[in-house]
Length: 152
Image 1: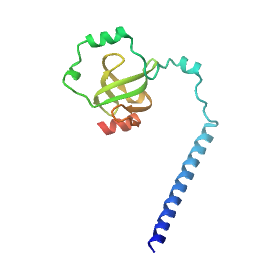
Image 2: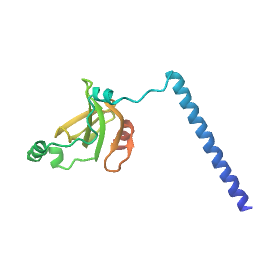
Image 3: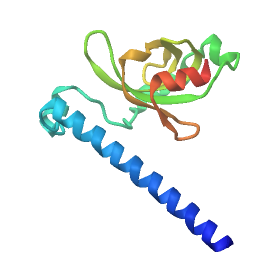
Image 4: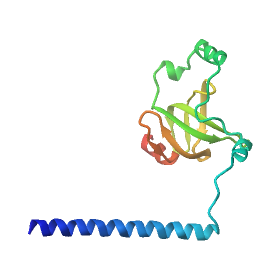
């Protein structure tokens, strides 16, 4: 009798899984039909035209020495850190860059913190972050708004 109940539970779980997969596939087909075609990935030339920086740029030696010589900001001196995140960002001029940030404060629309690339405190709008935001402490990838809700 226990084996029969176990088998029925297993069949129920498999059925739910199949229904979820079919539903997801149907949504994907509907999205593809609304677009009219499947978008093609960018070529190397197109990515270069967008001025995308490398994912993990090498810091020149002179810049690294300059960064260590600078006085740390008040936020760093006081230990106001909510973690470290990395993301691709499009600024108001349309320039795209990859940023790593030690977060000091979060609101529903902005992230403020110490930008590792600029070696200065910067504020970033969540709606200008392209794609997902990576939490460097956990390796978790989340949408910027979901991450902000979690840390607000």
